[in-house]
Amino acid sequence: MRYPSLSMPEPSMHRTMIFCSLFLLGFVPASAQAADAFQVKDKTGKYADVLTPDGKPILRYMYECDTSDDAKTFDTAKVFAHVLSDDGKTTLTKGAGGKFPHHRGIFIGWNKLKQGGKSHDLWHVRNTVQKHREFEETEATDKGARLTALIDWIGVDGTPVLEEKRTYQVTSQDNAYSVIDFTSTLTATQGDVELNGDPEHAGVQFRPSQQVAENKSAAYTFHKEGIDPKQDRDLPWVAESFQVGDDWWSVQHMNHPSNPKGARWSAYRDYGRFGPFTVVTIANGESVTFRYRFRVTKGKSQDREQLQASFDQYRPKQSRDQ
Image 1: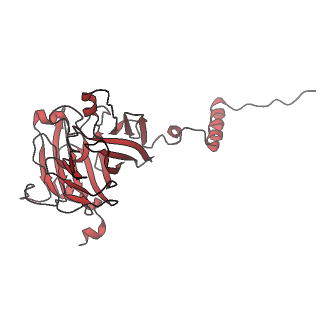
Image 2: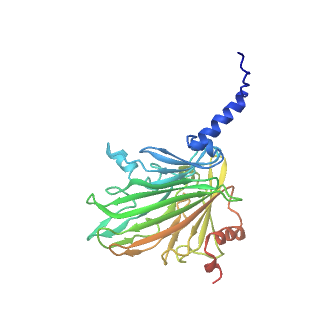
Image 3: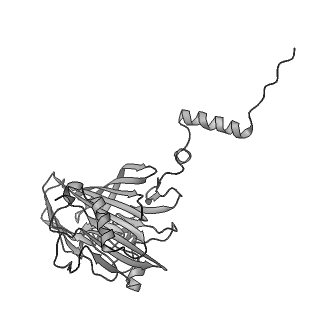
């Protein structure tokens, strides 16, 4: 008895059928399901990269804590984020070493943090540490990516003085290389805490590449003429241009209206570190949240009107109407 011959599908059709079956069963890797999406890729114990849809890292969350010797202990005593250029390799921000080695990327700290009757320097981190505990959440879509980490601020006695929940969110936006939203919630768990210092040694700051300290290219733009950052407080934003390699870059550092008031800015150093500082008291069991946006563009800073328009997209509508 002869059976009718069965025609087999073409190889390409066969692969498609297998892919669809695996997709329905949930076995297709995320990279295959969302080839055009951002990704968060963790190099366990070292750093976590936010990758753009073309696979290049654009932000690197640095969280290694290596206590094998004194030099490595200091070099890894602070959690921060690098911003990477469009080649996916060059960091636009400074890490450990260089001029003022405690200045690193997008970072937060206070040199006069008072708790338990003692002063804890969580800016210079010579006998203190910001220690990454764990990732609370990572998320990536076709529009951007977000990572949230829990960080212990360890004081001079080797015990936590604050708990931090920190988020770096990277978003695509027209006319910008990258938009990075920084959110930090600090909680006092071991008694009242006072965050104090000065604009040079405290707050949420951006430090560009060590190259900027060498070429002294940093230049600043304020929201209106006549601003004196040493006198004027609660500036809505400051923009900075600087040169790395042959390229000019700019960063607009935006101060969310919900942040604690009385902020004084450091925005005049030729090596480029800039950002706001605020004195804040946190009662035991209470929290305070800081929110800032870093809008990164390639080229020198846009004009003041364009920068203001970018800030208007960030602040809540109700504050724009006031």
